[in-house]
Amino acid sequence: MRFLRAAAQALGGGLFLTLFVVFILQVTARFGFNKPLPWTDEAAVVLYVWVILWAAATIVPEREHVVFDLLWNMAPRRVRLGMRIVGNLVVGGLAAVAIPATWDYVHFMQRESTPVLGIPFMWVFLPFVFLMLALVARCAWAVYTALRGQGLEAELHLS
Image (cartoon, rainbow, N blue to C red; front, side, top):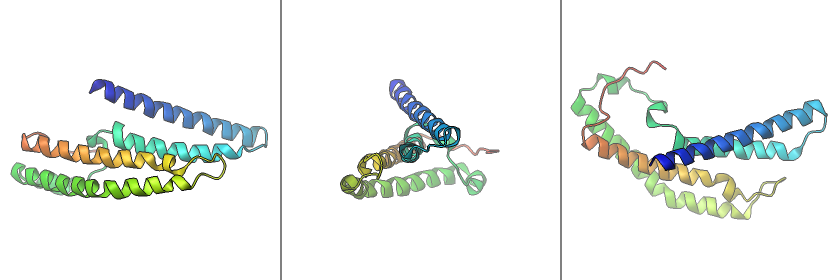
């Protein structure tokens, strides 16, 4: 599991580093040499989509996601157990049901490509499929841990 986490973080870091380099090239070409490079705009957008979706799917832990926990913190432990199980079953179930349609759409986008680089849109939006798969896995794991009595603490989120 550690190897997979490290690999996901390395890929995410590599994507972000590539995005940063493309951005620096873009700024340098545009403002330093007054010769904008059309491919850098497109590459930056594609890399941004990948960085955000990849990080949300594989790197950002659940505790770092935005939550509305006012009711959670006020509820007794038994109610939190129900909230955690039902909420994750609903979200994970909806994501699981949506995976085939998500894949169909992403696969359908194979026929269209980006205007400058010619990258098929399937490859641009493929990380969304990973995000959906990760959402199902995270929700299943949350139900499992809730049934074991873990992750039910009331926390004060200050950030």
